[in-house]
Length: 263
View (spheres, one colour):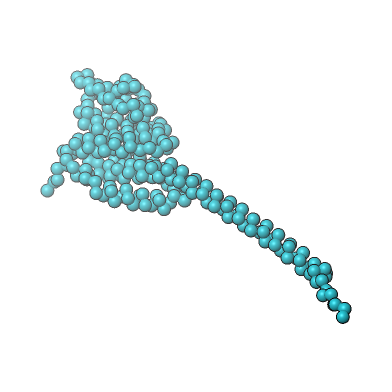
């Protein structure tokens, strides 16, 4: 009896077509997996790089947020509560405020590109405007606060303020003279503000609250610019600002220190 040979389906057109289709599909799937893996790796690498960039920005700017916030709060306190220089106890208040302001200013690590306009020592607001770095201007203001009593004792005399840079200036009248040392950090501001002999009444007549408020406004403007420049750090700024406000509220108040309370 003759045997019947089974047909070889592997040689049929349908099988060959299906086999080629399966191989192509497998190749496409492998390619797709490769692309997906590459995309995932690229995405992970970009996420890591973005995180590193954010961390670098935070390390660079978060100290600015805190330092400038502290400085703004202190300047606002001085602007709102600075007593009249002739009020009893004002000298002690100003000395204490000047010491705290100097401490905060010297602790500020901000890259000092902010400029502040200080005018010639004149009772007029239209004097020449000198653009100073904020850090130097704040330190000069602290030294001006500290020396209000020294300036005021010459106010009714024909006295002048004569600079002897880079170390000091002299307040002198026909009967009396006093030497006032300035710090190297504030020298830039002092040299721009008092470039030659000036009437002591014009120097002593500068409004300390207004000076403090102008410095506060420049500090607040710099904070706003930093947040606008780096909006991704806005949430961190809000947290830092809130922390600064809470801590400042618990500091020993100096607004009433050494100022006798009137009944």
